[in-house]
Image (cartoon, rainbow, N blue to C red; front, top):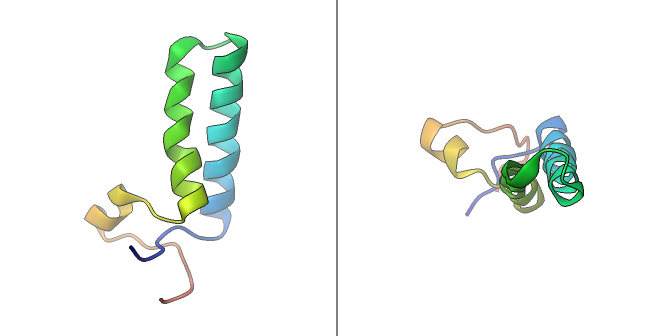
Length: 63
C-alpha cells in the first residue's frame, strides 16, 4: 500500500473527519457524522482507495 495522500490534502482530511465525528458525538448532525471516520482514516494512513482507482496522487514522496 503506497502513500497517495499528502500535504494539505492530509491535513484537511484529518480536520474534516475529526470535526464530523465531534458533531456526531454532540448530536448536532446525527448519525451521518460518523462518515467522518473515512476521511480521518485516509488522512492518518496516507492512503485513499478512491485515489488509487482514479490514479490520483497528492503525495510528493515516491515510495
